[in-house]
Image 1: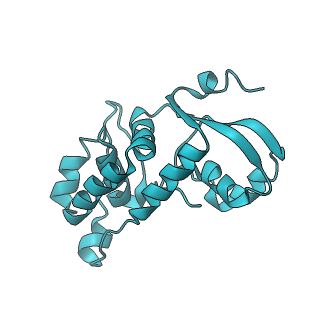
Image 2 (image 1 turned 90 degrees about the vertical axis):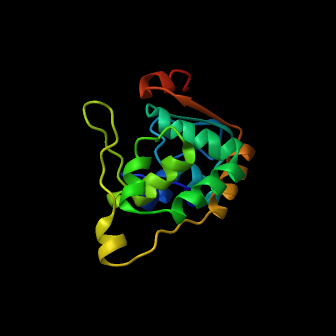
Image 3 (image 1 turned 30 degrees about the vertical axis):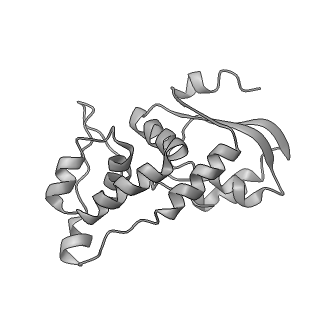
Length: 177
């Protein structure tokens, strides 16, 4: 299963190697640097190899965790609003939306429309990645997103009893054994 969100530094390409180091069965999967959740979702591809009962997923980025919670709890709503954002994709719309990253659908749109799907903040804590002008204006590409992926990921998160938290990695691993 692929993540619903692009994220810089994703471990998707090396997920199998990482997962092979996990015990065959364990109670709780902890992910203190959540990002796209590439390892968490890849575990769904290897259910016969590694099993866990619940997951505690966290990151220090509150907008990221807010997005994950909304996808898990209200996937249809997130997909509907994201669809509207994708239809309005332009440099002006993007510039307006990147100041509304607290909205989960806007967060997903901005991450999809941002240059290299990067997430970066300035010293004031403001998102400051430019729009993918080269792709959308110069090369005429259309922005796209598989909205069904949001529903699939939501079902997987619910099945894995996901608990989400905004936390530093130190706090997130407090209960790890």
